[in-house]
Length: 392
Image (cartoon, rainbow, N blue to C red; front, top):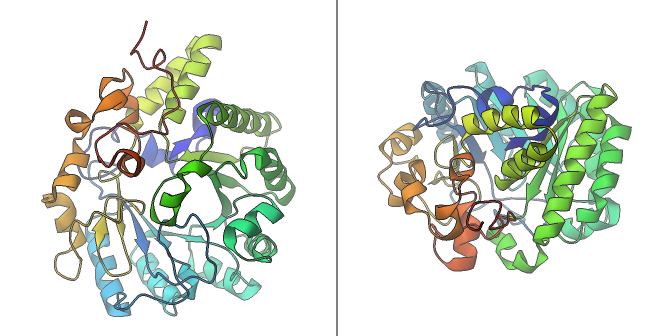
């Protein structure tokens, strides 16, 4: 994640402590030297929607052999011992899982920070109050456009209204909530409208995800936006963030899954405000770019361990056989081992880029999807050859 709000307004939020700590870059196993990684746990494959870009390829019911409640609690014990700083519970739709609140409560009772990623359609006033009362730190609700666009993506004509109601229910009980928006050619022109919605509904956080060609999203390569459109989108996100800050409304704004965003913002400020650019460079140097397999890990509904939720085609072990902490630290699988020190393995533009230390090769699932080579350049990098130092 790249905190646009932190880079351009210096407004700091909780996650920035993990992303931009002076200890964060270069650590082998976690975001901070004495921590394990942030862990995404996809607790079920079941979902009540059928989103066309779902990385998990979720289905209407749970997968056979999903982790039991007891296995989930044993996993949480291991994560606590490994000092995992955040457990992000996702799916499928995690609120479908019958024991979801029992598992969340158990993790919170152990001192773990727990967040939930959901489509929001099941968050009734009662569910919102339960989430708040349990002490869940944050709820991220997916909304991929305004009403017509979002509903088409979700495969449900009521998805937008139900998600918005879920957001309002969270706001009503004082539960921190935010939007998750996946950028594609069908919705990128609605970003102004999304910021208007954030302002109107007083939503404190928004994450703009770049499209990843993974899961059902693997079929959507042609749905991605052009390089020029990516640049225009980032400019628009930056400008809205600055506008919020100028009005005394410090929303947390992030982009996800494309670390050339950080370099692009640095270059933008280098032309107009070198002193500001220097501060941005220092922050993104601490972050070190993409940290899948380093400071981010994922566990699926069957207990399989992956580098992140978009790399489920590479399994490093299973927690039913080996604890997550051991799988992560030993890094016996060549992909996991490589991701912890990937620079010598990268190819193409990534290998030759002068900003490799800031980006760390960006996002590997896209490279594999396009080139059938995990270590090839990320095709979604929109920086020019001149900007990355390949041409005079």
